[in-house]
Image 1 (cartoon, rainbow, N blue to C red):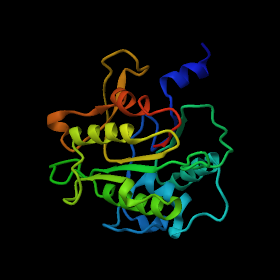
Image 2: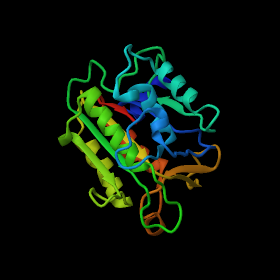
Image 3: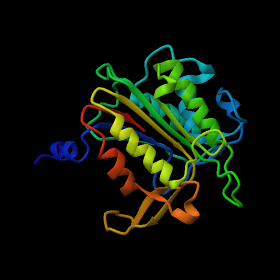
Image 4: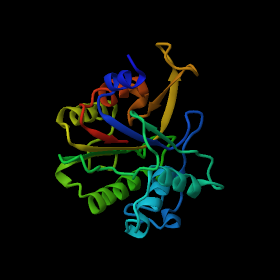
Length: 248
């Protein structure tokens, strides 16, 4: 079996992922998103990756005049962080990807429903590790998805610890990912976003070269633990149906 066939068997959907940094790094907050020409719907802070990504794709709440390629988007994001931040954002794909092809959250062949799941965790009420920009990231990204790509409120799910949305605890996050997979059908364009702490735990099944699993850190991590990358692969990335385009 060829490598491509193995990839298609393991990950039926076409998945593109932009991560905030390499596994060996941590991401960061931006104290004032106005420096990225972004709105601040719930305060001034924001995540470094989200702010730089939207600076490239939605500066001054405007779509760029010309379509950008995957390469141009990633280069623009890295350039906007260079010098002030140590993050080196990464691009991954479940299929061979021509990085000079247009960056498309909704490609032409995705004629089904546009679905989005966005998670923002500021860790409100925690004694340490409180963040200030994750809610802003979600609200700014929702505005971009609706304005530029035509996503509709009825197909956008938001988890935030802001008192107005479903809490982003372990059980709710896992349920939201499972529901997204169940609802998504071939031809759909799906967008996932996570702003919050990331972490790492000692690998428990021997599949990590560095000996650690990377994790998402839910609101209730102290009692219910972190969400391993292995779990995310099982319930989301590897479970998404063939014919779905997933951007994360």
